[in-house]
Length: 143
Image 1: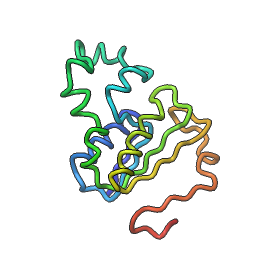
Image 2: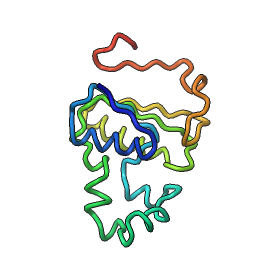
Image 3: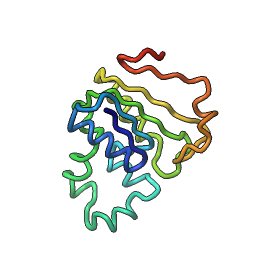
Image 4: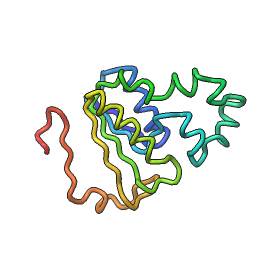
């Protein structure tokens, strides 16, 4: 069984993997790995937060901004994970996927990162985005 999510679903996929190893593999597209960095640089960032988590800020709610951020839970992620992100994403900065990729690589976890040049938050040109690319997962025959 696998898990997949995009945008907020990408965040929840990352967060889910820190809680369980029940999935064989997962894909997170344009997910948020660090709530505090998204708060300051994401398209919706602090303006959405003003409604969704009124009076909650990175400096007064560590339980939200650190304890719920997948990057700070990276040592608990063991499931093979494919991170995908449009390199020109104007909603969730591509650094959100890059940060988690670097952390998981440093930890020796099975992770791949596909940065898709010329694409924004939603990948609209799948054919050229995937042309010439081939991914292999642990236990697969691809690669």
